[in-house]
Image (cartoon, rainbow, N blue to C red):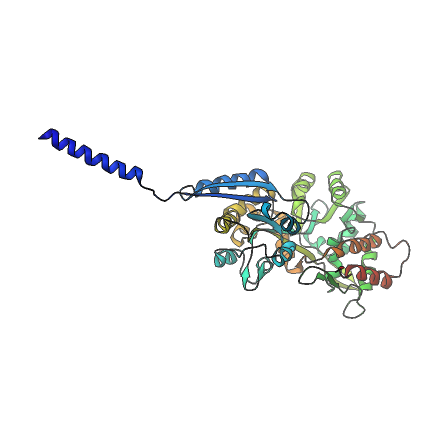
Length: 409
């Protein structure tokens, strides 16, 4: 009897095991994502690995990192649709191109993302807003410029006005450096005087009033103010590598640049490194605040992705508070997340504090390609003191004509 009971029990157990083994429980998804990289490779790989580990109970996740193509990303996708990534890193001035091509999917967790990045009114969210939806996850808010100075020579009160900065540099046989051969920086004076240069909504052509003969300040007034600066013995027009070399050899004691130079300048000036908003400059006897361009970086989800939900989760993951603070620690880039901005390690950065000071006097860079060459040529002429004695109004008229040229159809 005991043998029969045992056999019956064993038979029932075997049948149960058989049913379990032969059943077809839900299988985990196999998710493959591709990322176009504009990030530190090691940091991005670390985030990929951690994301896959976090969601390993839900899916088998593989994330492949590729360098973005050197050509226009929108053109590359149009020509190679099968090679398009699931997650695209891009700067804010590329949004219109992606948006117009319908290459971006709306973000998930919209309310949380918007709130984390300062609300709907902030520039960083406005830049990726269209038709009632937001189309990208902010990563950084550090693509802007401000004033660095050497506290061995300047006190805080000395860097409020560009005139004082130049005078102190000249008195010490040193220089204030700025790159006027780039229209990115030349804008500072025209923008500070209330003049504009920006693209149309499709980013296909520019509008520009730098040759204006009306308003509080004329374009010629700006040129004359810049020529006065160029005459100072304390002024040096030079590109990034040159003024970093100048900071290291002691000849440059103040300069205009962004957070990307914080490490180099810390090496050059040590504990004397300081950073603040741009100074005011003299125009028609008045002091006006120098303006600046500001920019942001985003992670967007390709609308044609086969895994838009998972791509959105990954984009939200790499742009959250923790990873923005970590990114700052690796690259020095200013967070866009308002809570990450207040983290102790972030607030210890002079560059981050200076960016925040300059932000109210900054605008998002929205320019079609036609802007760059003529604005740079203009800045170079003014930095050299207008050696050919060109008529300033005619010079501005020609510059604006080139900046606003319409694209060929």
